[in-house]
Length: 351
Image (cartoon, rainbow, N blue to C red; front, side, top):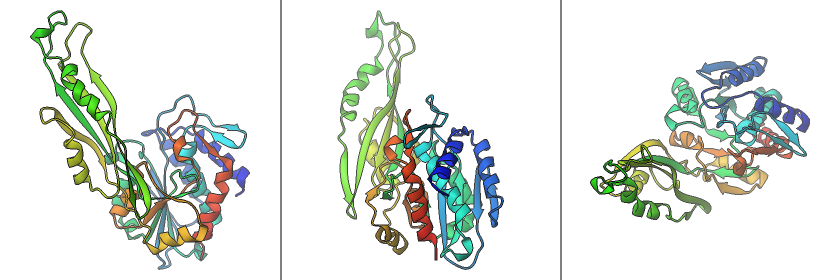
């Protein structure tokens, strides 16, 4: 499949709405594309897995999510010069297009691996609803894989590991009162202001793991308080979004985050995802790095590399999309990135 065909396939995928929770149409499209490829086609909810012929070779899994974040007026694909613009173009329908192209071009009989391709749902939602977790539970044979490649956006870099993610809800208590008599109540905003000033100024922390840089961040991402314009707020609720580096476990990250919140405030973890291990020492990963001489970096956002490495499967991120374009209203993917991503993966998977 050449640049033109890959670009047209990406445009088709973008034009199929697939916001998280609404993936039925796109999974049907993908399943139809797989029908003449031989092998098995397996469904798990709004996820579909293609399993190639089994010849006692090591199993390699290529994986990509089908869902996108909500549209921002960008649900229709546009061609602008050498770019495909539209929702999910980088994150990660360009990776899905490359996966489909690989399936339609590679001969599984002469591949060096037994192959499985997982197209899954609900990656952009809460971690406990992620479709890949369900797929791995429904199809435990996938856990025997010797390699997993996530076609997340990396701009043709090799991005190893990934940061873990925690979302914590912090409730600051107060007491409601008439705003004309505030002394009869306790303003929750006033109670929170010193803490908010401190927590919103937590600096980023850069760490190098196996020579690869990761960045730890803490952000207040939502904030709400108040019931009416003339009522002293009786609570303030803030969401803390903590991105922690691969050298920290979930338990360590939760303790570190809790220490930043006063004991008098209610603290509740509402979403959690472990970090992904850096697998540079795994021979199957090292070979890909050395073979193509590409830039190697750490994955700053969370990806399902974490889900694979937690299961003991070496994994890395490699895809044609641009990470910085993810979730942007003007999201795009360069056409020139599509064919090189397909070609390098095809060469690596071949015998």
